[in-house]
Image 1 (cartoon, rainbow, N blue to C red):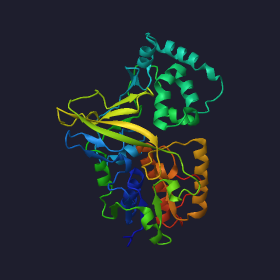
Image 2: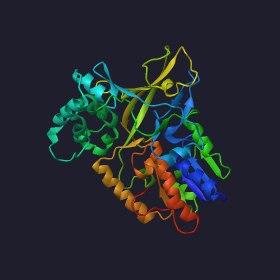
Image 3: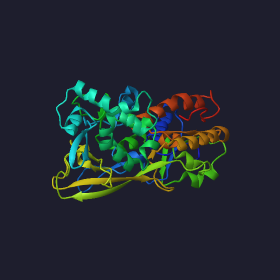
Image 4: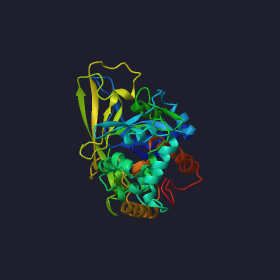
Length: 394
């Protein structure tokens, strides 16, 4: 299996596939990509639903957006994008509100027509309970952004369901991803480049990994072959870092998602791609209606496919989606970093799971492009003796 291989990449998600494509295309090196799942694409894997023609996002909805021109231009090599712009909504106490929180949300919630200045002044007053103290956790960060009433309506319950963690135990940077606007602009992302791949996400990976110098094998568990690998085989590992070290420093906190799919005999169930459910009494975090991701497609007009998302802690053997990243998790990860620096001489840890960082798709691609230039080009050109990363794992 490894005959003539210059690099083994563990994981066929965006980080691993980008590395493989660049190393094969730019450096002319042979790359073997393995993935323990039966498909490529990692959690971005999609496939068409035979009953409706909609693209099923098997591991939860993926919405591409970036302001990074390098990443956008790179993906144009493998796909064309639709003009899809994401707009999100939240159901709270049987009312539907626009997300992210914007002037329409604020006016509707408080039952008043407010100008931008009036809304901002009101939120500043509601957020004053923190004083000058910088936010120490997600709850305090959210209150500093939108005040306590909006936090308790739209963020507190949803976050508790989503992360299965008290918001006061989560780091403040998580909520920084949620924009707040004092205009009626309701587009979810501000990024310059947005859209959905016209042929689905899996088609991107098929083209990225189609280079003749890339061999891809699915259904292969790295830990089944690890003991038989050559001692100095360079490896790019994009799996969970705690699993790599057999949980020697403890289990990192991961969140996973269970998706309950259902076909319904209606052409349109909820009128939008994603509806959040902020009430804690509702067991699922959101409902995804897949047909709305690709309105340019000709889909079945008599039925639709929805997915109810249930968030929970990932157990060993589950697919880890997102790092929970509590203070305790950060301490565990630091110990894994120390092990990587001291014990692993020719292994590069990358991607969301390998670096225990929340990375969107464009960030994973950008990180892989950077690692290619700073780690793998020097290695294969003989200017570096190892693909290991010293300091923070990239």
